[in-house]
Amino acid sequence: MDIIAQCLSVVKEQLDEVNAQYLISITSPTRNLSKLDEDNLYVIRQQLDDDGVYHLIAAAKMGKEKC
Picture 1: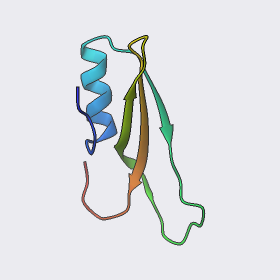
Picture 2: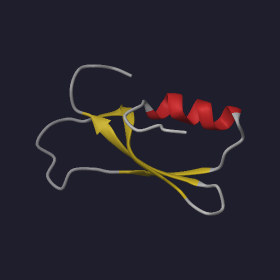
Picture 3: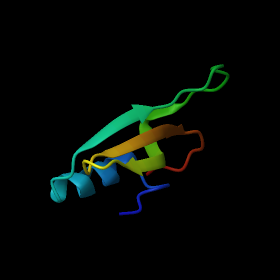
Picture 4: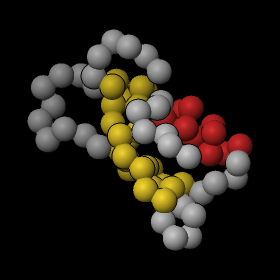
């Protein structure tokens, strides 16, 4: 399942529907110059390990576009 660049909330729903296990890490910038919308996360990287667990890295959307 390719889930890169999709809203994290949508991805979680899709994975829950098929009873897939997943772990989520959320990135943050080293310097906080602008306000990030942490309620508007999207997947920037995915990896599926040998046990079938999805490891997702999510980041906050910086623009005004909502998921």
